[in-house]
Length: 345
Image (cartoon, rainbow, N blue to C red; front, top):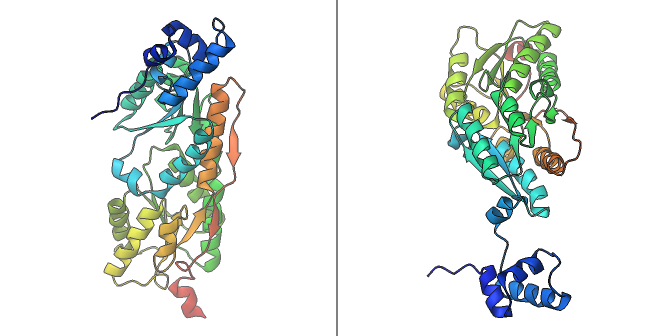
């Protein structure tokens, strides 16, 4: 049988007072004696009463929740460590403030905006995170028009007047290319995320610039949806090309791990025949063999700083852009000089 949720009426009956008196006592309003207030609060605690967040919101109170709408395939959220680590950081801050996180997956930007509008209209959230920003992203103007507190997880140049939490992806790309060029790699490819994502465009441009600075021919870029299947398909296309790359950089760990299977399928040895780099080190990049060279950053801290900024914004504080340290390259067992360089020695 379902357990009946205790109500103010239950407390009023037990205390022998009116529901109005219970409301005054529980909300610390004047109108009841201190002795009555103590009695009512004691009964509420005994019955396990908790305030109704929806009712509290309708009377002008806080929803005590923030929202995150994600436009990616649900399977991506389940297997990509970035999201889980980011959310763990967010939750570490929200839990301390008795805030909840509302999460919803959607198919397109119109649905993202509609979910934010519904949540805000129904007073189910006090603010939202905006992730996976696109160039000229329609969500920016939409949340501004709603007066919905929002923090952008992404570069400030696409965040409008909203505060942005970001790291310098361009610097990370330059660091990777400098390292691979120092090993002697001349043909570098990158398997990226969706082309319309703002951070993908930043990494694309940085790759072109870094290759030019290193005196390399322009690297090949293939855009995908971040899934292992698409990563494997892109790796296969690159590795059966007439002039295959000697190093491939993947925009997430799932695609990089999938490429290991493709290399094995084609009889290639990692790293002797092909060097692989993953974006964002994770337990997955460390348990496979060979362990994957990767860029690494403190993703839970990224989430915690984002949550702290959003709660400050909700409280009416001034919040500016926050620049996190860029992801640092960590060489592991999946990178070495290309065959031509080893043969020369």
